[in-house]
Structures are given as structure tokens and as C-alpha cells.
Length: 410
Image (cartoon, rainbow, N blue to C red; front, side, top):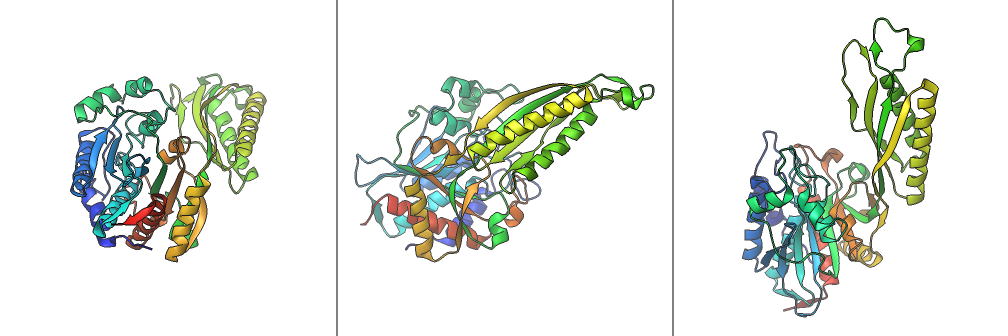
């Protein structure tokens, strides 16, 4: 088993963190901004120094390529993203990209050639902080989103993805949907499970199902001082009861069921007016498709029941649905073999967050490697991963990818 150069990987992470830093130690590199361009250019320079060529496709995904001994073989691809939240951390996405670079650097150290080519992908707009939807670049690459639709997406200032690609210099010409032999993505967990269990490596078996609902509740706006309580059609009190019932629904589907109300808007709100219209969002998640279907069905029934009790009008629509995504058994086994060979503690885990790997899993054999993040904290300037965990996850990635690429010492 090989091990990566832990100091070199950590130094690369800290050097990338100097690109568009925030006041509290995080980063702000919104997709296809000049800051994102600076991060990409730094990475691309490192890749060229490592003997790799760099190319860009039509949605701005960047690929750094190391040739294999077999010119006909499909590439084994590693990667993630370099764009961040407005006040994001130094590891979310960045770790997967730079761990992939460290794999190549480590193979170069010993002049190890592989039968299959190796590539590192930097996917465009994974975060969705500037353009919606999230994971846009990998969605377009894999055909889950039409290119024209992806290019037409606009940010809050009305700048389209197509315009941002031109301005940033990342309007590439490489074809979309190229076949891959396999895809491996290393990532911080973005949750507390591995840290709570004292485990440095998560063998990711898949991604959980996600269902987003948009809910509109209509009552009757009226004067707060002149309308008796029994005669009110208060949309907000109705929503409050609905949200409490949704929290109970999570208990009914415990421990895997997750329910979140992340956005709530009171239309034309005023201190002394009974709310007449409230919109809110519901995020349902579960590891199993059968259970996410049951959660959605139950959620709708609960919302309808409360609306009827209170004399409120209700509209519920599905905004987005992503089924549970099992990862490839052979890729999972490659990760398991690597972590066992290295002697690192590990556990199986299902990804709770969306990742580019979810799209890639419908395109080619795919899996992920998780490492803990301190306090389970992510999408936050204080996001942190420990150097030892960073190194162990990259060691696992190195050996899993090396095995998949059929290594031959040169």
C-alpha cells in the first residue's frame, strides 16, 4: 500500500485557501466568478507542473488528464469542485480535487504508470450558491440537464451561465458525456457521524433520496385587534401547527428519516395584521425510495388535515425529487480493500448531502470516500478537517484508484 505526501496535500489545501479568503478563515469563490477563476488557474498550474494536460468542456467543467499505458482505455476519474458558498469553508469540494492531484503527484514520485488514464474533474457550480440548480456542471455533463437549460440559468444579477463562462474564460469546447471507466470522489462528510464514532474514513455506499416540496397556505388577512380568535383564518398559526406535525413525522420515520423546513415567507407581513398567506419549503430525506415515498405521502396527508381543521386553503407541489442512489459495488469494494489494507478504522455510510457523484453514478461506476469534519460543520467559514484524517482519506483514494487503473511500476 502506498501513502500520499501528507504535508504536500495539506500545504496545497492551505495555499488554495488563500484564494478569496473571508474574514473568519473561510472562502468565497462563487461559481464562474473571477475568484473561482483564480482558484481554477492555481489548480490548473499545479496540474501542468505534474505533467497533466488541461481541457474544459462546454459547461465549464475542467479536466486535468494523465495518460495511461493503454491509449484505448477509458479514464479513471477523481474530482469534486472548487466553488464555495458565499461564506464557505476550505475543504468542502476542494479536498476531493486536491486529494486527486496528490494521487497523481504521489504516483509521479515513484514513476508509477497506470494502464488506464487518470483524470481529475473540477465540476462547475456544484454549490448552487450563484446559479440554480446545484451540481449544475455534472448534471449537464451526464445529460441530467440539457446544455441549453444549464447555459440559460442566471444569477441574482441576471448574469447567465453562458455569460459567466465567457467572462471567466471557461467557455470550453470539449464534448459532454464522455465515457469514464469509473469515478471516485473524496469529500468531508459534512455531518457529525464519523467524528462521533471516532472513525477516520467512511466507505460511502450511496446517496439518500431527497424530496423537496413547496407549500402555500392561504387564510384571510384581517385586523389583529378587532378579529376574535375563534373567527380567524390565520395562515401562520396553521403553518406553525403544520411544521410541528412535520417534526413529529421525522420521529415516525426515525432514525433515517429527516425533515427540514428551511424557508418561510409571510406575504405582505405587518405587525398588526393576521397573516393571510404563507409559503414554506419542506425537505424530506431517507435512505430508501419506499420510505421517501411514504414520507411524502404522509406529509401531504398531515398538511391537508390541518388545513381542513383550520379552514385554510392549501397548495402542495413537488419542487424536486432525487431517488436514492446506490454506488457501484466494485468501486465500493476497491475503497474497502484499500482502507482495510491500510489498517484504518472505517465504517459504511450513506451520503446525506447531494454531490456530483450522485449524477456520475448514473453515468459510470462511482463511489465516494468520506473523512470527518470537526463538529460536523460545513457550509461555514469555521469548517475544519484534521490533517491526519485528510491524509488517511487521500491514502484510501490513492490505493483504490491505483487498483482500478491497473497499476504498473515504471
